[in-house]
Amino acid sequence: MIGSLFVTFLKIGLFTFGGGYAMIAQIKEYVVEKKKWLTDEELLEIIAIAESTPGPIAINLASFVGYKKKGILGSIVATLGVIIPSLIIIYCISIFLSSLMENKIVQYAFIGIKCSVCFLILKAGLTMLIKLVKQVELNDKILKLFSLFIFIFSFITLIILEIFSINFSSIFLILIGGFLSISFYSLINHFKRGIK
Amino acid sequence: MIYLKLFLNFFKIGLFSFGGAFGMLPLIEETVVTNNWLSASDFYSFVGVCESTPGPIAVNIATYVGSIQGGILGSIIATLGVVLPSFIIILLIASILKNIIKNKYVQYFLNGVNPVVIALILSTGIFLLFNNIGISISDLSLNIAPIIIFLCLVFIYCLFYVVKKKKISSITMIILSAILGIVICSILKI
Image 1 (cartoon, rainbow over the protein chains, first blue to last red):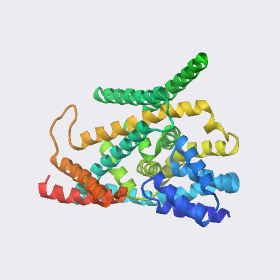
Image 2 (cartoon, one colour):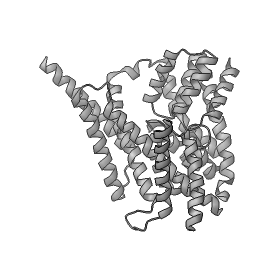
Image 3 (cartoon, chains in turn cyan, orange):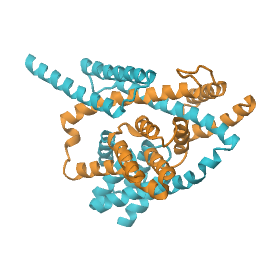
Image 4 (tube, rainbow over the protein chains, first blue to last red):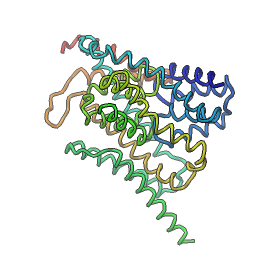
């Protein structure tokens, strides 16, 4: 079982291109359909948890599935399985990448690659923004407006910080957003109870 | 003590990054650039490499930065650093804190974090775009090649989406952009 966990997550780590969300499809295929280690509902629950906790989603998923199946040892083995392919591949790339970058054609290729990275980042951001605006669970208009307010507030802050080249860790911005939200929601709840 | 520094910095990244791979990029860039481990331009070139190699992007970047700063040991330590926070948090949730995600204050917190992460991703994308095409506060000379490549990519993506009703995968976009880069830069001879 331990060996099988390791090999399965090694395969997932080796064949997942494009980050955590691509991995969900792989996990569904290997872990749910082939190995039957999880049901579809359990997978959905784990995805929800992985999305709400910090860190790479792939790592969250591997740790969780490993723990469910074989406790702490299982989670260590699954996590190692998922990171070992990256570790080996990227280590090899890191050895020759800088000498490769001196080649003119490679430099041209990277001018293009940086454009598509930029495109992919903007696309991811816009998709998330559209999802935020459409958010169905927040039927409450005030709460929806509050999310948009936090977005606009942080966006403007980030632009001002960039223009004046002020060093301000984005960790603080994330924490400010989180705690503003806790205070706002608590206030709204308090207010609603007052009306009743 | 480069190993300790690598470990602590990547641990911090693992602990505070929400919103998947692209949500992590702004924080990783900030850390890597302020420590002088990579320039912002090299960083985004490498993100392109990560998009076309398997595995989680955060792990790939940790391995790469660790390797160029501290060899093979550095790459292992940086990778463990970025992985450990998720690992510990997930273990806690799976074992003793089963309902913490459903706790209302945790939900409130996450509801506030989400819009900040979106703002971070979008602003990173916009600054990177400006940077690529050469607009900065000190210097206003435009690079024509990246503008053409970027517009081509947007056009091809939209065309494919409208005609074939399919989204082009990230890895195909990266390969396409590399070819476009070689062709367009060779023609313009920069």
